[in-house]
Length: 322
Ligand SMILES: *Cc1c(COP(=O)(O)O)cnc(C)c1O
Image 1 (cartoon, rainbow, N blue to C red):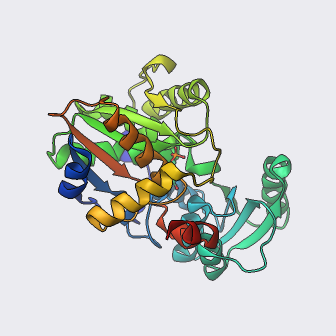
Image 2: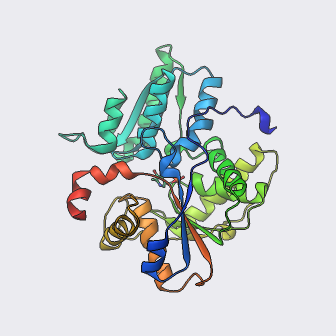
Image 3: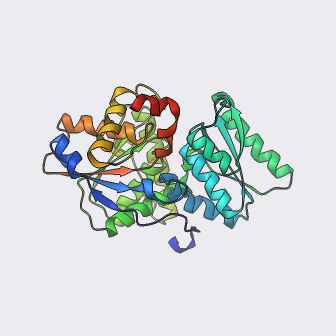
C-alpha cells in the first residue's frame, strides 16, 4: 500500500536536529533541541515542502499543468507551492486574502518572482474564488490541481507521518515535540507517524489561530483519514490531540510582546531565526510553559521548527523587532 503513494523528492532530508545549549541555559532547563524543518531546502524551506512532496506527486500522477491554492498575503504555503510549480514547469494560481499592496514584500514578493498569478480576495470570497478559478481553468482546457488550504488533506499530511519516521530513524530521544499548529496537517501527520512508526515522544501543538476544540476535532478527523492512506485505519479521538490555544488570542499574524521576546531570545542566544507568525508564537508558548514548569527539568523538549522565516522581512514585523 505504502509503495503506491506517489512522492516527489523536493526537500533536503533528513533535516538536522541541533542542541540549543545557550537557550536551555537562559531558560534554566529542560534540555532544548530543534528540528530544522526551516531547512527543507525549497525556496527558504518550511513544513509545506514535506506536504508538497506528496501533493505535487499526486498532481503529477493526474498529469496536472497548473497548481491552484489559497492563503494569506504572507502565506508560506503559497510561496512554497509557487516554487514547486516553477520547479515542475507548471503554472501556479494563488488566491490570497487581502488587498494588493503597493510594494509586495517577503513571501508575496517571492510568489511574484516564481511567476504565480495572484488574485486578491476578501476572506468571505476565498473558497468560492478557489472553486471558480479551478472550474474556469478546466473549461479553458487546462489540467489544474487544487492544493488544499495549508496543504492540509490526507495527501499533504502524509509528509508529516513520514517526518516522524525520519525522526525515529535519527535516534534522538525527546520527551516532547512542540510545534505550531494551524490548518492541522502537520499535527495530524505527526500523530499518524507516532502510531505507525512507534515514537515515544509526546506531541504538543501550540495553536496559532484556532480555538482548541476546533483544532482538536480537525486534527483527529484528518489523522484518521491519513492513517487509511497507510493502510492502518486508526481512530483518533479529539481528546487525544494535544493542542494548547493559550497563546493565540491576539489573532493570526499579530506580533505581540511575547513573540517579539521569543524571536529575540532565539536569535540572541543561538543565532537561530524563527518567524513572526507561526514559530514565534509556538516558541513564545514554549517559553511560557517552561517558566510555568510545565516540563520537568530533566526532560528533553524538541522544538520542531516549521519555517516561515521570510516573513521576518515584512516591514511591519522587522521594524517592530529591533
Ligand atoms: C503552515 C505553517 C504552519 C502550520 O502548519 P499546519 O499544518 O497548517 O498546522 C506552521 N509553521 C509555518 C511556518 C507554516 O507555514
